Length: 258
Image 1: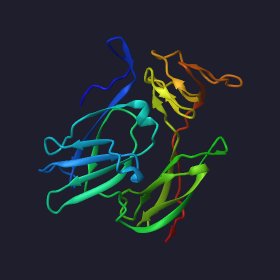
Image 2 (image 1 turned 60 degrees about the horizontal axis):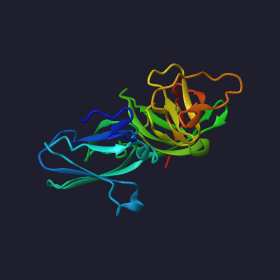
Image 3 (image 1 turned 180 degrees about the vertical axis):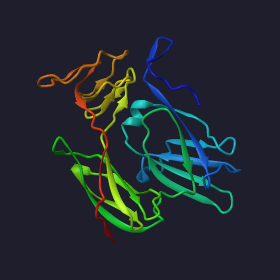
């Protein structure tokens, strides 16, 4: 896979925005198999007439690589990725994926998300940070009688609360909540209000953008929240220092089988 662009690129005196590279390892039933497989990437189901990227396997397993503007990728939290394998019996699969950095991603055309196992159920989730309801990701795991942990589901808490759709097999259910880990600093990256930036060497603080702009061409001297925690310049943007809270878990929890 191509080396990711970590800072400004200069071409004939023109400063180019930061970019990332994406490549997929495409499997079927957990293994590489013969035949061409294609992945098509769209913004959403409502815009499938506007194809954004096409990945195609070259050696029965690994696809070509795409280079993309990082700010464009970060501006949309999730992208619709539709996979196709025409080898008999033909298979197709579509799911939403989020991209935040250069990566080699594994995509199994035939695997589900564990949704075919267990009884459908709902779990009420509420997440607070410093007593304030927030939108965070919650992952639900289950420990059945055989002791082998399994993933039961996951989902967001818009506005701080949400009903998560899960599938359970009668075991003990636990929920884990994850704080926003932010995007690692990339020189020149265009950022928007609300985004979090993470220093390349994390030292306890993240930086939440309060005014949109572009990050500086070199990593700044990071600061801690002091006093009223006023925003500071971060390139042409401004940001405040915020804490990152380690993941927490609760359980066992009651679930409502549908």
